Length: 316
Image (tube, rainbow, N blue to C red; front, side, top):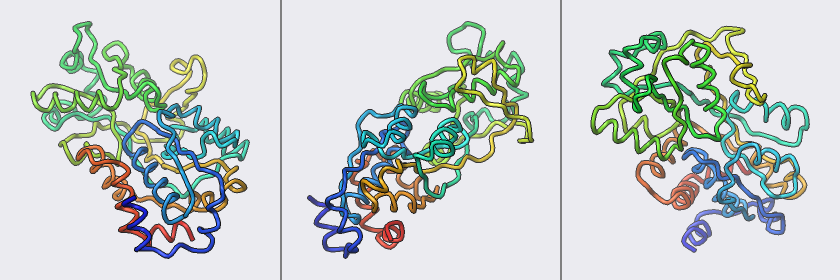
């Protein structure tokens, strides 16, 4: 195997890492956005390589609630939540990290989440107050039903609910409606919109490669203040019960893991608690995987081989 041969020539594995050969397989979630996939493959590459253990990405395991429940059980069905965005996943954090104490985490990296328009609309749509204008909403009405569409995200994301709460809280539901499709489907829409200079309004976050590929402009919101956000996304009446009429603070993004690994694979648990990700590095991975269509495993293995000092700090 190319990776194994490269690492064999490049690294002396510590005795602690060597000792985990007999430890349990680490199973990693397969969340749907590119950043999460990139992080998952890097974690796998570290565990399979320098750590001297074994990991697998559980293909298709993208439901975030199921991932959290599996980590809580500690039965090895899933051990790693690769990209836990806070406060988007507050319910998971409270239930499993704070209350049950069955899930651990690393030191987070910062992420942003905003609503955007292409640069060629930046002079017309500068703030959410502009979205209250019927003539602006009409520009984004793709199906002729009298409401403008905005991409809120994938059906399985908490942030998709968040943006619906925001549009409701800003009093925009009479003029706007969410379009809920996969990230891949949206990226195809984004490419088509830019090619034809068509209107498009959409949620996005950093790090992500679309910021390198397209000139996009954030839509301004009122500043965050105490009491401007009251999110109850796990209630049945989440849309009616929640409010969010201000700018999102920068998210804190974690790698979370089942604390059962502390017994089942202690070296892996230690590594997952110590991994420190940087947005610029994550964006480097995303660019190669998402924009340049490189194989995620190759990107991860090449990066680990080239950055062994960093990886060894995560392990030791």
